[in-house]
Length: 305
Image 1 (cartoon, rainbow, N blue to C red):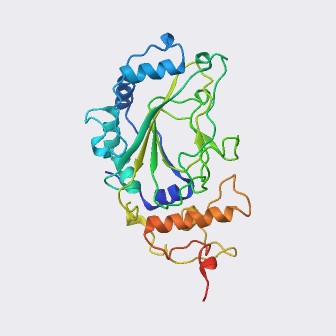
Image 2: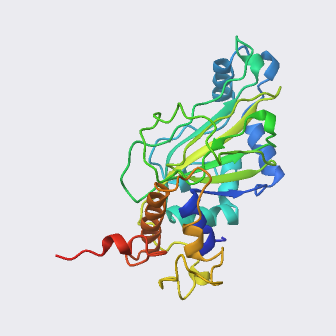
Image 3: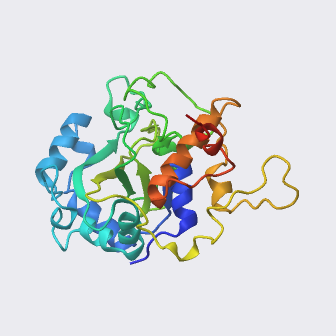
C-alpha cells in the first residue's frame, strides 16, 4: 500500500481532488467493461433502455448503503482489483481511513447525440453532490474512467478549489464556463479522487461513442486526522513565515504555499475566505488546531475578553 504524502494531502485540501492518470492496468479496464454485459450499442433505442440493459445483463453488484467497502464487491471483480491496487488503497486509507463504508456507486453513461430525439448532445448541469454540510469530516468520490476519454466525449467537468464553498446542491446549475474549470481528457484507467463538495457535471458527448465513468462514494468511520504518510511533513510546518515582504524565501512546494495558491476563479476579496477554509480543513486533517498559514486565521482569532 502506498499512502499519500504530505504535499498530496495539502493539494487535496486546497484543490479538492487528486488525479492518477492510467493507474489502472488495461486488463482490469477490459474486465470491467466486460462485466457491464454485452449490450450492442446499435440495438439501444434510448438512454433509459441502455441503462436498463446494463443493469439487467451486467454484473455490477447491487449493494446497500452503509456496507463496509471490504464486503461490497466480489473478490475477483474488476472493481475489487482496482481498489486493491497499492496506489488506490493507499489514497483511500489516507483520506477516509482503513474501514470506510460505501454510500453508493453508480455507472455514469454519457450518450452521443444520436441517442436523443433532438440529435443534439446533452450536458449535465454544474452541481455539488451534497446538501449544505457544515462538518469538517468529509466523504470522497472515486471517479474511474475505464477507457480513453477524448475532448469530444464530454469528460467530467469540475471546478478545482470549489469543494469548501458550501451551496445548495443545484443552486449553481445556472453557472456555465467558470474560469479555471477542467474537463477530463485522459487515458484508459484514469482515476480521480474528489472531495464530496467539489462542483462538477458531466460534459456533452459530441462523439459517436458511449462514455463510461464509474463512481464510488466512500464515507469515513473514524476521524480523518494524520492518516497519511507523515514522513515528509516539514519540521517547520507549524512555524509562521514572512508574508507580503518575503525576499527570496518563498517556495511553491511548501505546505503553506500549496494551501494558499489561488485558483483562476478566485476574486480578490472573497478568495481570502477560501484560504481560511483551507487552513481550517488542514487543521482537521493534521489534528492540530494551532496550525496556520500566512497568519490568515491567527489574525482573526486574536481576541480578548
